[in-house]
Amino acid sequence: MKTIAIAATLALLAAGSARAEVVDAQPNGFEVRRQVVIAAPANAVWATLVTPSKWWASAHTFSGSAANLSLGAASGACFCERLPNGGSVLHMTTVNAVPGQKLVLVGALGPMQSSGASGALTFLLAEKDGATTVTVTYDVGGYFKGGLDKIAAPVDGVLGQQVAGLKAASEAK
Image (cartoon, rainbow, N blue to C red; front, side, top):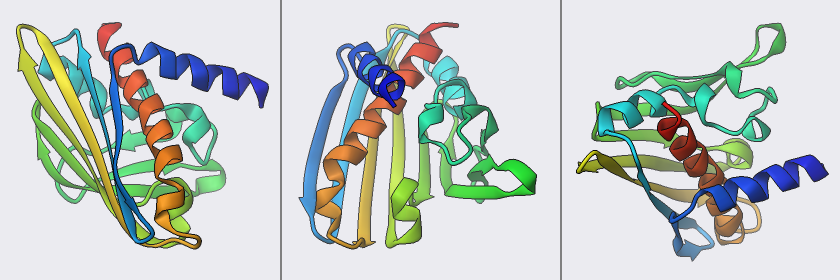
């Protein structure tokens, strides 16, 4: 557990100039937003984005390994995970994919998956001078025992780890 906490702290520090924000938090929903500049062109960032096994933290998977993740970048495809013994998890469904520009997924991540909550996770990519600004927004609504406002900050923290991973993986190419 200590190793996971240290890794999470390092991932947050690696986010560099990433901007984080809990935009709104109510008992019935929340919006969190992350923005980071990645020193890579949008097409390279896109290629990394649609390969979550390269950047998603294994600690935030059901199987314990990001190598089991896949993401279909076409409407109706899924952000899915293979589990041992033939099991699987559908984390989110792709509803809008514009290569190099925009990816929208709908569904519920982590503990929200077994509640009445769902959301839209949007990745916007904007390239300028060879660098790409990535804005990630997760809008969640519905029922979650105790209120969704109570988990907005932790969800923002986890999202921050993923955005830091995306930045690191995209810039490593």
